[in-house]
Amino acid sequence: MPGTDIAIWRLARQRLFLPVTVLFVGVSVVCLAGVRIPEALQYVPFAVGMVVLGLPHGALDHLVPARLASRPATLRRIAPVVALYGLLGTAVLGPWWAAPGVAFLFFIGLTWLHWGQGDLYVEGQRFGHPGGSERPARAGATEPAARAGATAMLVLRGALPMVVPLIAFPQVYLAVAASATGVFAPGGGSGAESGGGSGGGGGGTGNATLISDAAAALTSTGGRIGLALGVGALIAATIILNRSARLVRPTVETIVLVLFFATVPPVLALGLYFCLWHSLRHVVRLCLLDPELRSPLRQARYGLVFLRFTRQAAPVTLIALVILVSLFFSVPHAGTDLPSLLGLYLVLISARTAPHVVIVAVMDRVQARPSTQARESPVSAAAITPAPAPAPAPAPAPE
Image (cartoon, rainbow, N blue to C red; front, top):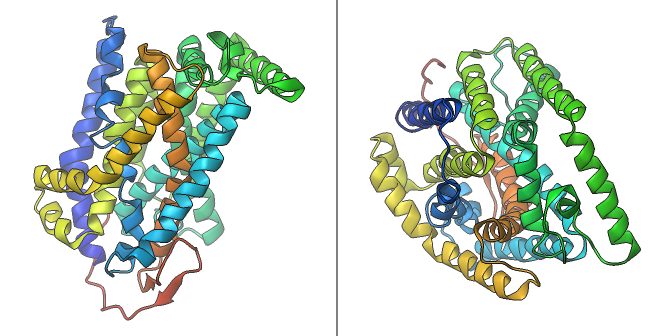
């Protein structure tokens, strides 16, 4: 039902996403006015996100194959996702012990891709494209040009939360990296060197040195100017490559995000963005796959929607929290101060992000084909089979 989905997304933009954008502007203005936000308060969004929106937004991935196929969630359809999480999650956790600096860089790159991926999909819904990442919002554009525009949008939107804080708050950025890598790297307490971590042996020391040198270069005045010019070039390229689309809303959002990440302390900014921007959009997308939640979504009964979603996500969220506690007792240098606890939480998120990115990529591919439905497990990109589809209702005009 493309027309219905466009209406639901439009309502969500008005009732959910726009207030978040206004909130981000408000927080930015407060910080620009010189108001100092207490350090403990900056960690609150990440803490709340453990049980609301943030961590739970990926807790229904095991149900995605069945919901994409409009079939019951049987063990046969859930098992491949569980296996994917077990294999990829373990594979991602391993490097945190062996080469934590490399693991952190991989996490940054993966998050860059995933957050750009999420924004690109939502942007596509303005024009009724079922798979935003494969059918970008450019009316009349050729396929190569459309893909170039989509790629620019993905890279830009992923870069804003990953790069702008590094430009504006380099030492805080490195301190967060040190908090994550220092959990595994003995003596990795502060600055760029601890951000690199150590892996033991000559190879680990070499990696740490290279990463330390790269961090020093990026956080120098010249490096930050270069990064800022790069972000500016990305913004210009995104506008040019998507010039046949209606860009007022996404351009305003981009400006707001640049202002937000350039003025708000990174821990607070990323915590708010993770929960209220990225996770909120993905939860709306997930709820559209659930027949039980489509109707209240259409009626903008968001309290009911999120209550039911949180209840559905609770078992897997609880499992993730148990894993977090297990990590705390198993890593060699877990601390109890707020930065150390955040670092440990980021390690858990990195292990969950890798399989989650795969599931979202499958969602993008399957939903890009409105006349198809998934087979027994769409975890494989090839696992789609034709299904009869009713004639689509006329879609409302894009915004």
